Length: 263
View 1: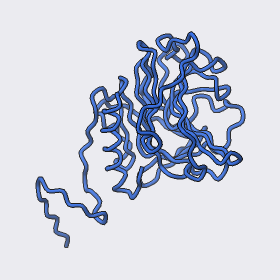
View 2: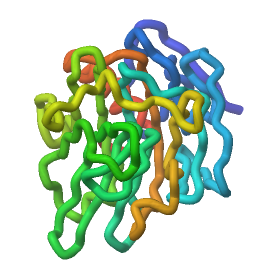
View 3: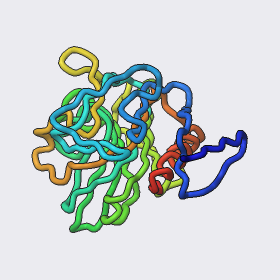
View 4: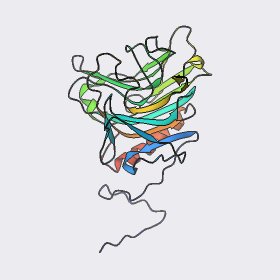
């Protein structure tokens, strides 16, 4: 027999006791939210869906896949967005992966869509996380790109939290990786580019975001290590400022700590 005692308004700090239930809360403008330790239901109450692409896997608190296996969401791209993900690479080779977004790239400096990207190189002993926004063709130059500071190659196997914001009307975009930089990392806007004109459609209709699976698995032409685990995805219909991103990061830290992960 187990007895559960509930004491209101008291926080019990014991790493051996995982929370039975942690209410989900978020900043305004939330379009979709998935914390896979809580299942596959959209926590934003907007009833967004996840449709399997190929045969993705699931773990205790994450989903797994690669460029051919992941999920198609029902969330459309837009000119103002914030994309947030918690993920890790688990390949023993160099890695190139998209945890969330609708990017399709012919090369690292080209692409259509928007999203977070991680890539690592054993020869350079580093890993980077990037936020990218493309124009109208996968073979066209990126309109905006922000790269993280270089991190140790081995850290690709650790869960990390990252956010990419894009504001078309303001023609701005920012990357935020709180473990590597306390400040926002402004994206470099291509000369003459305007994020308000980027293509947010696909086949004549709204382009939908993917989790893990590539928008076009045939490009980039040579991709190794696209297999990743994703623990959390949040999508907002606006550009979150630094204070809102910091609050969101703190909530994610609390959530993942229940699974023994420090992000």
